[in-house]
Amino acid sequence: MNDVLSYSGALLASAAAVTKYLAARDSGRPRTRARQFLIFGLLLLAAALTLGAPATARLALRYEAVPNLARLVGDVVAMGAANCLLALSTMAPGRDPHPHRRITGHTAVFLAGALAMALLLDAANTAPTTAFVSTYGGEPLIDMYLAVYAGYLTWAMATFHRLGHRYFHAPSTTIIARTGFRLTQLGLTCGYLWLLTRAIDVLALHTGWPIGAPLIGATVLPGLCAALVALGVSFPEWMPPLLRTRAARCLLRPIAHLRVMVALALVSMLWRPLVRAVPGVVVNVTVCGRTTMLYRRVIEIRDVQLRLAPYVHPDAQLVAAARSRREPAHEHSLALCEAAALATGLDAFRAQQRRPHPESPRVDYVNHDRIGATPFDEARHLATVAVAFRFSRTIRHVRRSLRPRPERSTTTLAPCRS
Image (cartoon, rainbow, N blue to C red; front, side):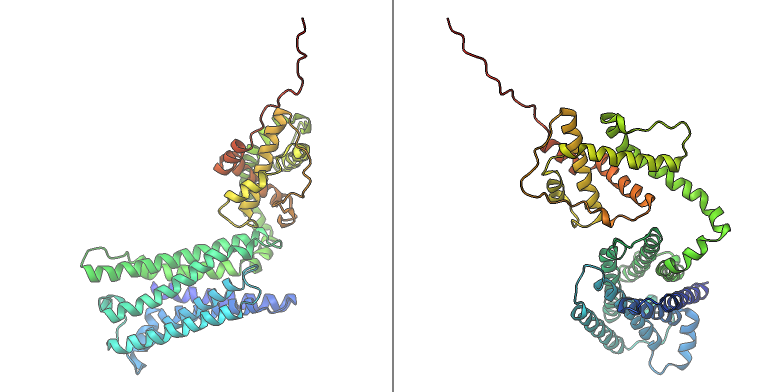
């Protein structure tokens, strides 16, 4: 079973690398360094899974001149794939305009780690075995070997998780690209779980506690990690042709209906308080489907937003951006600032307090050029705004801080004269 999963994951990773290469060649797109790192990393991942399969390990025991040499080569190849992942994270949009020095540093750390692992394995003087962790996991030198290996893989995957969203929050991002990235993140999560099971096995050898990890950690998780990563990175290439088939449209129609229903429920949380204040924007239609209703409510929210513009507090977006934990260009920060503007404008509209036009230009964090061109992308953005408008503590703080106060009367009474 372990051999089947390992070889299947290696085959999927190789197929994903070939798919990315052919997609770049057929479409005429330039072969960028990021794409080259991605293809090379997928090939290294396939090689690491092939070398780590039990059948390959048993075959290597017959011919290897140095004990556990195949194990060392497989681990170093896996670290090479992680190094490609670090290079991809470094070349993410907005990360570094000149990433060559950082990539060189990552490569130097990779080479130093591979050399340290080779020296530690040679100094440990181990005998050939297919159960490397369970046999030598209690020795200090092997523990250091495993720590270098697991630490480098964890660092690479965590870096991609932290910086990888930059790839898919660019203006050209599509829903298919976001879905592919979610699959890649799910595959990396399986990689985290696999490293955790290996750490549990080593801890059990040191302590003698009966806390051995389940067998799924060594059999299913590595192949599942590679399969999900391969499917995720190649998702934008093979999914669009599949969606154009009649069978795929029939199968995905219920999912599309569910997405529309969820988006309609979220957008309605923002639509209801706005149309209560400005009911004139609502168009009465007798028969209307869910998709049409969703897009109508998006248009009506934008109409109300235009009417509330004179009432928006000039500092609303600045206060919301100051309390946001993410970058100003992040999608969540943009939605938070837009929700703050709507909230203060709605409060001032109810109190009938227009804001004077500020002399200095106001910083506007809401950049609608980042939102996709499709109506559903606009609805998805407004759903994020609605969640922030309804549940965010930052919005509640902005509304309390910038709550409109009743205007004092400027008329004075004439003094009484006797």
